[in-house]
Length: 461
Ligand code: SAM
Ligand code: SF4
Image (tube, rainbow, N blue to C red):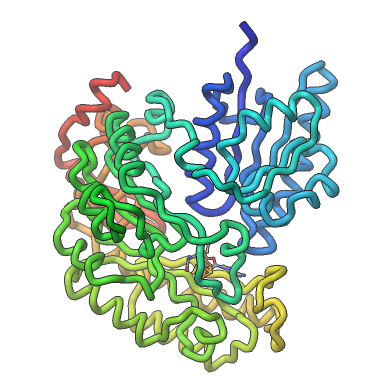
């Protein structure tokens, strides 16, 4: 029997990449690759890359440089280390990666991970491979399911991709080019995956997609189901106590999804709804296909059914042509909504996107100055949101050991990290925790009560 080999997958960028990294490792497991958390003892290192902003894409080459040193050290010991580049940089740059970085053995695009066992075998035979064609077959149907040990190692909260790609073509964004057209997975496939995760001890599922609320996959009755209908179905899966979804587009915030927030106790009161800008002029230039008023109306509809709903968003500052007045519109929108948190970025021109060619690119110093002002406002809002929980008792899903001995870290319904002293056996249970202290990034609490997590206990984890 051949010696078991090890694969290390390093993820950059979004949650979809985290999910893909797990599925790559799952798909390589039957081919004899065990997952390792360190690249040092790996026979195969996969860099799962992100192309969304220039900085993210540049990181890949410095990371390849680091792994190349390991490859040379391994070769000196008579060991072969294969380097694969996957993800959106692989999709966007293809052959160029092999030209720039001679140490790379395999470049695999974001739709071809199910072919990894064959591609790796060919690379091991000395072939240098670039596979970035969008395939006709369903990648998700061909990817291997995770083994129980892998599910347990990854913890009690899991991502499940339900929708991929994007047809919206915002003028700043590479996603429609790197991930392809919008595709929704069939409901039956998702239900089977979620049941499997639940049987392995998972209690919280976050459904992910670039435009998750545009989900329209074939349902169990043959008709196209909405995200709201899918959530109602998944709420019935035994063992799944919490559901979340991300990332949503303001245009696709349908009534039945909003109604699900009122109906489903499993659906957590937190929505990430990117707006990018508060200026209608810029929203039009970004091709967002929604106005500031549309965005505010979506928030009002959500808050009408779930007044305690926490909101977060994405913002881009310094989009071409952004004036101080446009930027103030964004700050005013933030003041008006009140966010629990947000991601904010300086506009980064991406090759091949319309905005990269626009006149009036904003100077770097102006972008940096606006980003600082916007982030200061978000931090103030996040602090006051967290401070409002002092003394309150919350349901916390306990996920993993914390930094201190005897401490566990979990998540509140509002996606806040909560640290609490609790026995390790409580991992996987939803505990009642009273918030005793509010930190800058997390809450600290005292355990009131918890029930054992039966599935994990049964599995001996
Ligand atoms: N589909 C989501 C949406 O419509 O908002 C987000 C997808 S994108 C992976 C995540 C975020 O990256 C975007 O919301 C946007 O704020 C940011 N982003 C995308 N392209 C960017 C660019 N060229 N420069 C700076 N930020 C960018
Ligand atoms: Fe990119 Fe816009 Fe599609 Fe979001 S909706 S993935 S920002 S093109």
